[in-house]
Length: 345
Image (tube, rainbow, N blue to C red):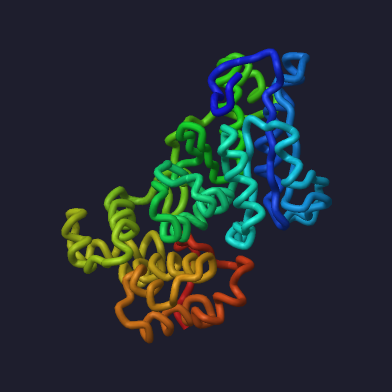
């Protein structure tokens, strides 16, 4: 089988290398590999082989404290992988260094299919390997990814397969991606059997969103016009719409819209909208090196002073301090969690 082709089968095992970094997310990494283990078991032969690697090799500690033993990146070419996945979690920009990027570019020139799990797309994009491609990362980091890499078409899908570039949001979606690869190579029967074997309920297809309308932020039971208003807010973060305009667009009076927000979110439309923008701002502050003023403008705050005051009220610290202290996530995330009822201090 030629490199860059996942759609054909061969008697030789398909070779996979997963590069991990310190504090990588173990669950999606194992979730990605386990369907291949199941496929091998069900077929009674090695259809797939895999290797874990890291920049320098040796023991790597995952974010949950468990350790894995890895090969060194410089030795990966000796395993002649056909698919290479980069699995990172928080602060992926730390690992977009010369050694890592040079190694990835070299393997890409050899025709290796390149992919990212969780925030692994950041590293691939830093290497220039996602330019012109559709790609995704974990939803907490989507805004930062789009700001940092404008040459990448960012999607909020669970996983993306764009030619010989594949990316995955992490979590259980990594298992969906692996099953999709099996489906393409060995057909749906084995993919379905592997899914049943690991008790994966269904194989979600490319194009499915990371967050369906039935979950956050308000759930499918909320009135459709409220959900439409929230989506409209999310689509206009840099240049916020006035609440009366939102109400008019969804076919409600401002009073009716305010009542819907109060009953379903415990917040006014103005506060809810502000929190969405601030949540996005926190993602950019903690996950990029964008100047604070640029972050403020990107999130609809024309005054940096107003932005800093609002940021401090919501997160308990000013943006510049959060940039230093907030690299490890705490209660808040880059995606709004507005169903939590909180009162402004």
